[in-house]
View 1 (spheres, rainbow, N blue to C red):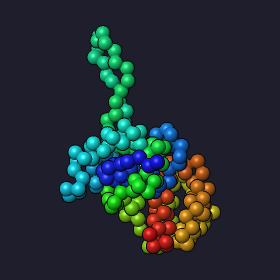
View 2 (view 1 turned 120 degrees about the horizontal axis):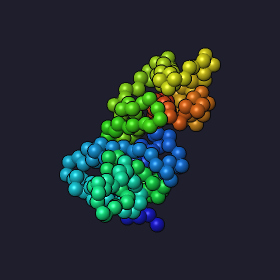
View 3 (view 1 turned 45 degrees about the horizontal axis):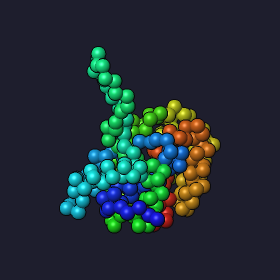
View 4 (view 1 turned 180 degrees about the vertical axis):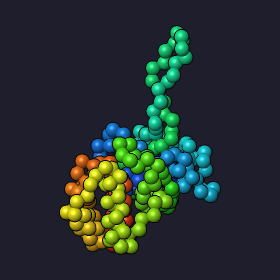
Length: 228
């Protein structure tokens, strides 16, 4: 049975679900951890007009945490005063960003929990382990980024993909360029699965780091080809 959620809770879960899907994340990060959209960005997008106030949002965020549908972060350990006889072990969330849990992902997919209307937000995502700090990434229908994706020509898109790899210190051979072009062609045909498979093959070990940046570019082409 689907959990009963208020509209503000549905809006938050819906935004986090789109962010998760558009970044091409896997089930494993739901059980471990990943850095989701900034809470301030979610607030700005969802608290529009009088439908959902910032008070509604804060209550909904806390309720979702209590239900273990989301986690917030980063985690900060308690700082005990020097010389204190009372030692507190543990920490707390700074509540700078929010992310889905496995339970939250399942709940967000259930029809009764889908929001009545979609919101668009600007979200700056920080990727650890790569050279993309403060780079703005596309995150789809509900979560919209300021990164301008120029997919007007194949060569423009190819240059973007090559630059992403080169920024990671990777050299791109002629054969790899051909595979990237083939991935773009698959995307133009609406075949996102084949496009992603080719991208993964070209990137090799770097795929995990570049996927949140590279896939939204190609994914946008897939969506346009399917009139989404």
